[in-house]
Length: 400
Image (cartoon, rainbow, N blue to C red):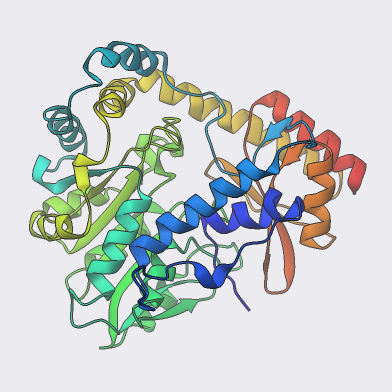
């Protein structure tokens, strides 16, 4: 049974199949020029482009989308300061971003207590996940192979790419609270384990590992093997509740973090992300990624403004919590349980086949996603505005 999940799989199993579209999965990642070799970097690009093309072919008739709550986007959009920065950046849109990347890296480094050399920028975090998979599980390190240790029902862009290099993925079951079981993971480490991968907050469960536990685990394990933590949703935790993992990087631990501006900053379309890790590793990683050459000068200037706009981040965090509570109440009123979330989405079990649920919601103008775990169908609904969550519950009440 497949129990992992990707941003792209959520998309593929949502509106596209609802609309009767099909994807030739066997074509993904095939190298060009007559070769049958797997090219994971090309695979990700081809995969995304295929989905974009399918959306373009949808055309009419099509239900009016009342609530787009399938992709964990920020419904409140960009910070006003970021918008202003974009308008001003139009004047230099004809230039490469020679200096803006260094400015943003310094801002991040100062806040996180590391050096700018410990920061690597990218066009979103997906590029970094692919580059790290190539580096850690491809021919660059130990000739490929080995095992990546992780948890079941987690985000698998990195894991899927690693598998294509012949790396095994060993997934430890979640706890009864739908959290990573660090003790069980530690017990599974063997000489064949190449790397530990953790997504925190986890996607699609929205759960978090207690900060002190994750720091202790990383401090103990990272001297033995690399620990890679995907923190795409970390900004939805208050700063005081986040694990102090960059401090371990500053201390020289073999620890790697990836983050994105796509979530609380609202940069899903602008594309900006970054990694925090040991300086030597990030230099090596440049061989597998375009790094800070990929984000445009416009995106970087907006990112600099948004990163410093703590008031907007607090607003988005607060509004997300309010809308999430509204969803909780609506689910409770209908007798549905849910997994308490610390991110901008909620996972809850449903009582019908996934595709039936998706089609019914889509016919009511609600774009959401489903998945199965241990033979139980689930819906993962992104947190929208208060109005959008009300529309979701209106449709939900009609179909259940």
